[in-house]
Image (cartoon, rainbow, N blue to C red; front, top):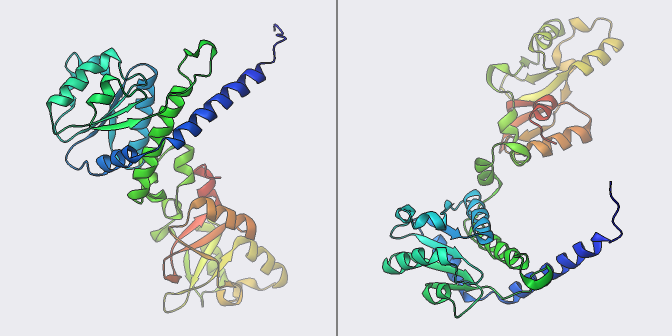
Length: 328
């Protein structure tokens, strides 16, 4: 491999420093139009949120549309070039149309701007850096971003300018998300797979329920309990009293230890062997938190309850259920 004498780390640090300064400039530039943009999106009940841009701004527009959709505001990207060939039909009355252009003079956006201006029921939001531009003048909400120095030589490669576009887009998404009180449970609905989905899985998603739960009664003989724990293959039994309340558990580890102390283990009743007041968790607990609890207590199973009914077991969560779901 060829060795280069130049230290490229210096370049990297300079680029990042330039972009940080651009974001700091953006932060100081947040004004009333930002609130107006968020309000327009929140009030968009009958229409759609549509975002468009060209080139690097188009890529940023796609990302913002995706982020908004993932946090509870259905949005989609429209290709500006295709709009001149029929796709303007995707934009209609009551829509919020967000156009992104650093210069505000992007040729491909002109037809969209004219179309939006003809339909007074479309709210046009312009994310733009130049006040004398076509987009700025035509927008109902003028979301002005600062003019910034690009990170590369000659100030020509879109770097800092796209970073601040992305920053303002993320800020809009998070502002709408917080107003809607969009939480982890909501987020999970849109992210059921992958590492994000795994992180947000709850005990309720993974627990064993119904007839698969190995319930036994306190007065059952251990001889019969041994048959049940072998057939269920969970390594745990949940003990209930006559009122149906969970009073204890028996694990295969307990059985091994008890057999060493009691030669006549099989003749004992379950109540004499069980661990009383077993650890029970709410079904809405994150699976990752349940796993951490198991690890800290050095156990492999937890009883699961409904909120407010700690002694009423509705499921069993085993460490294998969690690990198989790639929860860490």
